[in-house]
Length: 205
Ligand code: UDP
Ligand code: MG
Image (cartoon, rainbow, N blue to C red; front, side, top):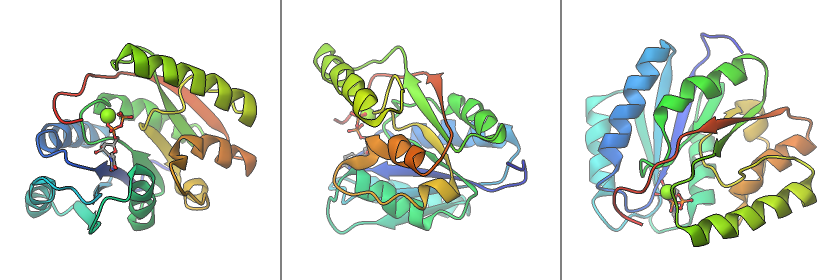
């Protein structure tokens, strides 16, 4: 992957008015440090709070920010799909708006993409969610690993980087986003997993 290639960061948003700005600022400072060209695409998945006005403010301040807005809530996978369609970059990075992902991990994801991996998946090795969620996820992770034969520690982590050719060819429906690496691998994509940071939700749910 050439260092001149455009990076698209796609961020699905559902009722995240209190988190968007801080997450955005952290993201932009990391993207600037990479000295690569980028765009940020927000997908407002029918938020009922002021998320879209917050996003509009970001767009007014920065020509590299764009948005897609859904008239109602379609779910995270649908929001991701819309963002992927809108993205122009060679590399697409998926990230949450709630501040649980750490933008500082993006250079690590990019370094793996530069080495030739098609999908780089985050592994929340110090996951900051409730024990109940961690247990459910741990069972789900083992099951998905068994069934798909693509062995990752953490399928549910949204922080991932994809080569556009891989992700644009994956058809997603339902709540399928956890299976993107498995689907991509079936069409021959190479997958890497890297440890990433994880934070508690500051607000919202
Ligand atoms: N999200 C979305 N539509 C939904 C639910 C969530 O776009 O119907 C967004 C949400 O705003 C966040 C990301 O998807 O940016 C991940 O959601 P959440 O934090 O609820 O998932 P978790 O971190 O618990 O896996
Ligand atoms: Mg979250």
